[in-house]
Length: 113
Length: 108
Image (cartoon, rainbow over all chains, first blue to last red; front, side, top):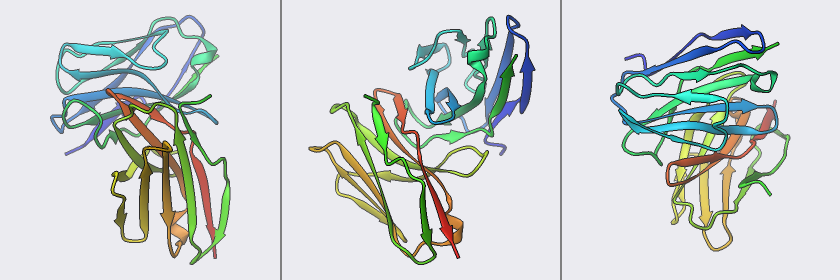
């Protein structure tokens, strides 16, 4: 049982490049979410999903896309990277429709130059 | 005004001390509340959920005051291993809002 896994652990992008951050969980959780964490800001919710085929926007969705084709996977796509997207990205999952204990992946440290 | 605000910290306390963290939230319709712990350069992990009646888990006690929109965390008999950042989390309709965190350092 691996819990929540994220790849890659580290990534450097140039401005304008696109990429996908991968997230997978093996706990059969319905709810999955993506956060970014910046110094002094706390974690901010980017997008979330309450089940396969259902996604919704969080607090800071601009510049990011998500999809949820399976229960296990919830990739986050950066469409055209900007320096303002330099951050640590965490994926999380939980039982049910949300509002419960979340299990976090180890994070992806992204730098956009 | 931020939706979830925490004591700025840092808190530096000796082993064995009692320390309390506070958190206020702005949305009165918030539905569930949590304290998470985050070690340096690691992912957050749930410390405890916070219930209206208050709850205790060993040396940790959490309180919720809905009327004042206020959450607290009390740590008794601090250990070196309690050194971490403590995050207050408030949920409304699946929109989880995190405080910026309060850093605690417990010293020998």
